[in-house]
Every structure is written in C-alpha cells, then in structure tokens.
Image (cartoon, rainbow, N blue to C red; front, top):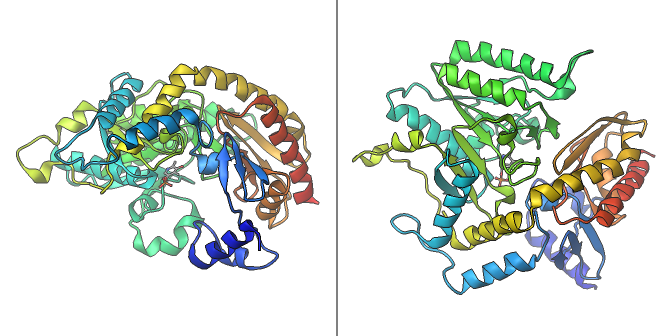
Length: 442
Ligand SMILES: *Cc1c(COP(=O)(O)O)cnc(C)c1O
C-alpha cells in the first residue's frame, strides 16, 4: 500500500473532516480525500510528489505561501523564547507589538485589541462587546442585531445568529436567536439600467427603514465589507458602507465590520472598509492575519467603547476569554506577515497581479455559460448558468485532476490565490480552470 493510501485509510477511520458529507469520501467513486505531505509556496504535494496549486489559499488563510522561510524563521526564534503565556494579568512583546501595529493600520482610530482564537470567536466578541457597551452606558435593551441577507460570520451558535447562509443554519436554527436581515447590496441584484451604486442606495434605504423602526432595540449592524465571501462572493459598491456608517451614526447603532475574509490585503487595501473611507466601531480580523500559519483573531475597537468598560466593578469589564488568547507564536506569525507586507510592498504588487489575472481570465469571461464575472483585489469569481445539479463536485474533481485546488459554492466559481503566485502560475490556474469548466459542463 502506498504512503498516500495508508494515510487516507487512517484519516477516514479517525478524522471527521469539516464541512464534508463523509459518505462522499467513503463511496469508492466519490470525492477523493487528498493526502498532503508538504507545501511549498502556492503548491501542495502528496506523498507521491503529485502537486496541486492552492487556488483558495487553503480556505482563504494563506497569503505568502506554504513553508514561507521568513515566517518560519520568526516562529522558530519565538519558539525558543516564549510559546505562550496567560494573557490575563500578564503580557508579552508579540501581543503588544501586534496590537500597536494593527491599531496603526486604522490610523490609530481603533486603538484597543481584544484577542480570540478564530474568526467565529471574533464575531462572538464583537457581538457581546457591542451589547455590553450599551448595557454599561444605560441601554441594556439594545440586545438585537441586524445582518445582511446571505451574510456569513462564522458557525458557532452566536455567530450563526448573524449568518444567513441556509446550508450552515438550517439544522441548528432551533438553537439560535436569529438577527434581523436586511437586503444585500450585491450588485448582481441590479435591475435594468441600474448601477452597483444604485443597488447600494436601494439596500441602504431598506436599512434605514429598518433602523428607524427598531433602533431602540438594536446593538449593532454587522457587515462583510465589499465582498460577502461565503455567501457566494457577492460584491458591492463601497457606497453602501458609507451610507450604512451614516445611518448607524444617525440611529445610535454600532457598525461591526467583519474583515475576517476581506481584510489582510485581500480586496486591495489592507482593510476593506478603507475603500469607503469609514471607520467601524468594531473590526474583526483573522484568516490571513497570521499568513495562514496559526489560528488567531483580533477585534479592534475605539477608545469610546473601551472606556465604557472602565470601572471598579468586575461585572462592567468585558468578559470573554479563551485559553490561548493572544498566543505568542500566533502573534509572532502575524508580525512576520505584516513585515512581508511592508518589505515587499505587497499591496502595490498585488495590484499588478490582480490586473494580470483579470486579463488571463478573459477566455473564461467570454464562455457562453459564464455570468456576472467579478473581481476585486485578489478575489475573482463568476457564476455558471445552466450547470448540472452536481456541478460543484464535478468541477472540484476536474480541477484536482488538473493539479489545481478550487472549491466552488454551488454554481459560483471563485479564485482566491495566495499573494506569492507568479505570472506563470496564474496562467496555469486560468488555463486549467477553463479546461475543468468544459469537463464539468460536458
Ligand atoms: C471564515 C469567516 C468567519 C469564521 O472564521 P473561522 O475562523 O472559520 O471561525 C467569519 N466571518 C467571515 C466573513 C468569514 O469568512
């Protein structure tokens, strides 16, 4: 039995893989489980040396490639100094420096960092902190939330309350106290003659009607700025964020920007909300924060929110803790990642890569069944019309057979490559994806 085969059998016997119908792996002719022996740059390799180009950045987290020598070196040095220490009552260099540098990236306007271990816990922190702020300032009745249609903010029970993707929600609905939903500014909703900005204005008008009625009970509106990723790479005009910010201010409701997927340079600026020239009350960052190395999330907030928790009473303090809060290794990986952004002028170079990949995707854009091609920064997506019911699995498998890793949502195909991809790899990705599309539709 090959090394690949041995690992597959052990994995199928012992590991319950996430977001997966395990039966599909157990059926002999089903979706293959891929054993990975090692990674290098944007490539993943199995035990026989078969390779895959990681077109989804390993679930949107990897920015500067697998086994990045600079992040590795920073982590090895940190490992010999301090791996972890309790963050209650204690502090350490990596968590201090990371907090300072993240705050600086918001122009100092979000000057306080609270730490979690993954994206969903950042959502939980922002939701809890918003309500607790209102409670501390004499408005305990503000305990409701609004989210956008088709939003995704994580899958823990609190985060599911503001998630509107039915697949993730259906089975667990009885456990959840659901938030209100308002229309998405997704530009694909444009009617004849409407621009993306018109759709944004329409969605903002619906938001205003909702805020007018419910603001007294509402703690916060939570949005994924510019792109609702897990909801199908739905993109919107930055105008929506500007209007939502104005409305939240007018009605005394917090604005939470969930930048877990769209932050860390993904949409072209370090944070996505910067393209709308606004500042949220709470900013969640996680996925790309550590360059895809270690689980870590941060919620940044304002002096105003922070100061509302200061008091002699412990019950007025923010109460949310995870065992690994502010883990030193994860913070060090995040610092090494920020260094690469600076030293390599990554945002600037990504602008060229983004334009180049957009041009390379031209043949796909012109495919008769491709609709709504869209891109922003290092995210590219399109929808496939008249696709077979099992399109996403067919396409996924056709991609793997062509050495590329892409995982469509239903009929929406997207690319979210790590920032280290080179021109030749982008060409490889677009050519192979085009061939995989033909096979999946045949
Ligand atoms: C992935 C994601 C989350 C959840 O992060 P996890 O680390 O998977 O818990 C929350 N919000 C958005 C926008 C995401 O893309």
